[in-house]
Length: 467
View 1 (tube, rainbow, N blue to C red):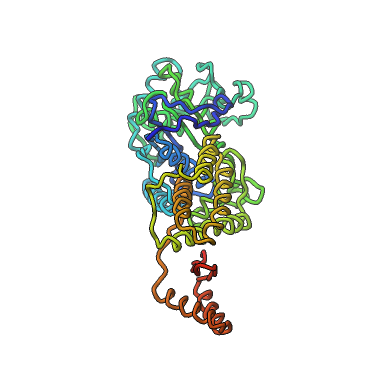
View 2: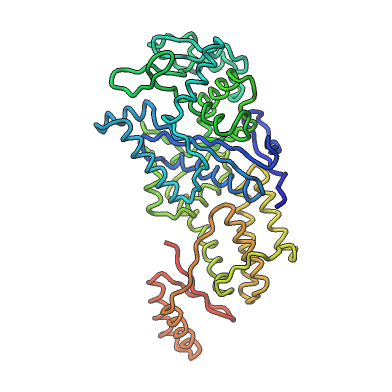
């Protein structure tokens, strides 16, 4: 398969939209920040997970081999505090919410990462990286742990595009820390009584949060990999510190392209525990399908902020309904057959739609524009469906399947049950005999069971309603 070499993405590091040119030609190595497993993940987390899962899918569709790594932070202050709240051990908390994470991403049709490194299983790798920094005099020891000296890394602030003085002015200093500089951050934290700890050259303790991603990403993706992604809130300090740690130790570029998705707000306000407006993903998927939730998130450009509300989700559900209904019409028109090998180039209009769709995603992964192309396709399909144009609908079906599969919003369509088909035949015969009251009563019965009928000159479509 010919590789799509026209993909452009916005690079936070350069603040420019750049052509994607992977280090290893036809292979994209990608690292996405994963969960800290102390609770169920919320809709803001889900946005990042869905966006970059979909981007990976587009890369594969474009012909690239993708190596996708996502970390699991299974030791952290939040985990320790949660264990105290629930009167259990930190590893019980980690285990519980790691299992929940895998359950929930499955419900969202998110493909698992190729590698899910856990922080507690990679301690030796982190210690090795800290040793490199310590031996170079870039890290120093205090009574609380080992800290990174930001003044020893000249490019500190290059991701957030601020210098050290600007960053210092906006930081709150923890008075109990014996740091040289307020921006200096922990690489290794000495353990307190009753806290989990690991042996290190400096004393028993556990890693700081930032070091795990530098160590694990470089271990599994090698030096200078292609894409590091996550939420915009991770730019500073997390991703800034990741760069500093790696590049100060190894003297080479850490990552070529940095991708960040925008905030998910709740009715115009930032999600916050203090406000109490956190919305858990596992609660939402009880009411809405994965396809609707993905459609909702992809309807806004990934870099823009977006607003979560029941009203907005219902609006997305209404929009997605037309995709779901069109799939059913084509499925029934073609008797459930899927033509996978058809060449869309034989029809200029259909092929042009395909190229417009790809061009939209090539342009900094513009999923709202791509979805707009899908709706243009839906409108065009109606004419051929109503005319019972089977040959052309085979091409439309392949295009629609292809586009919706890339965004992972393709619904599962199944055969209509035999008893429903028989009832539809009775309704059609009653209509031919102009017994409309009787046919309408049977239509209402079907509608109450979740099936709507659409009559055309050529056939009757049985449309299963969305839940």
